[in-house]
Length: 475
Image (cartoon, rainbow, N blue to C red; front, side, top):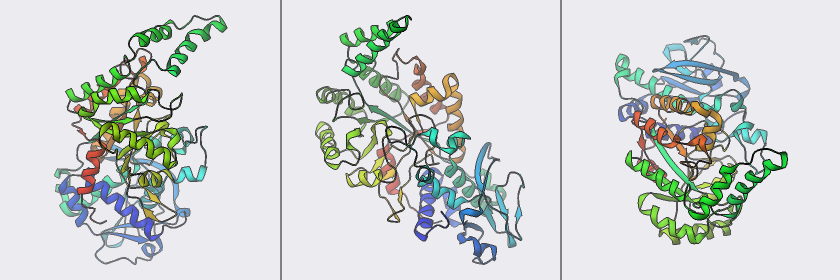
């Protein structure tokens, strides 16, 4: 991208303002609104052609002048990772040559040391996926394909960092030495969810996989997996064990700690990559969970940009719950961020949690929190809200193994300083299932850690209401 259009610039402004309104305390937001922030073309900035009242300048920068550097800066007891450094214009000074945060210009004007606008836009519109075009065999852009995965930047909520720096500076301008005493970021919002891929362990594909794990070692004269064989018999006798019972166990753990969650119901095509539980049993089991939590739609793989299949399954869930789902997530996170949001919006989905990675923990769009997607073709902002998925059970275990508590606490601790929403997915079958010892006790430990940080439990439906009642303000 050489230069942002006016619509793209205004989109980033609105996105940052919504994010700040949602994640920061009232006095901090008031300082942000009162500050004289001006978005300005790079050439105008270099010519010192800005409004007299401006105190903070955010330049719109040609991407070819941005330096591909990454650095860290101490900030309010945490560490910010930033990238896309801007060149220092003539007549401006840097607050730190090696680890800059702000550039100071004539008459004391300030500008961020990184490409605030361009980097935010690239992340929110997933430019790296557009450029690479790489996809796995299911058609997904996974974490291992991202250049940010290679150097650890997938774990950096760049947009949260940028917004926090901006609010902090607005406070310093308006409050002076009292800025650090003003309440800053709100407690971290935690969004818990469960994808109901299967609620019984006696389906054909699950049992066949277990039998294969038992038999396959024999072909190479190795010891058979007798635990897999035991699981076959356990679920023949008690089909709900480790699945529906897992879900109820997770919901009980949440409720005892004051948390709430949303359950995404999967119906439609059955099979190895489809729904594992029949509609008959889904109908029966939903009666047990509908009174206790929110319900959304887990879009089956056969609904990808297929309106008839989507509407049929959408209606099925409505008939089962007496409520048309407005929240959803794609099965296997199968989506195209350039087209799927438009499709889901047209089908009546208002908030979606599909934007995450199946193979890693991290911030796919560089943001921990809800935002509105942007269509570059039409140059319009969508009405649907994206709530990116930060972490899921299997990815946590695979990426962090036994140090997962420390790793997730580092993320939540950072968000407690810069503001943000942490979205966590935990599946039935991963809570207390001996077939998955790597996640045993994980969910309850994470909930307890969330309590230590005084996080606030919010379901996607609560987030929708809060965003609808918020004032977008201005930048």
